[in-house]
Length: 66
Image 1: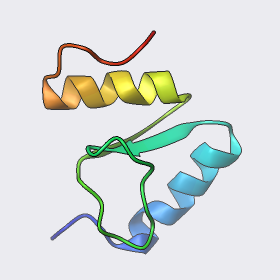
Image 2: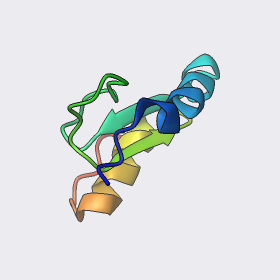
Image 3: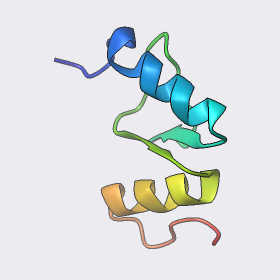
């Protein structure tokens, strides 16, 4: 199981994007629905929050700008 099946993420990604949120992969790039993503990825209300969540997931101290 890779966690990269498009139908598992497409609807949620669309909802987050349409609501003004952000989604980022471990590589600090938006989640690509066609695959090849550095997992884990996160979706959040804005890019700053998405970066903070990624920092928590990876144990990074910086967490991006607040």
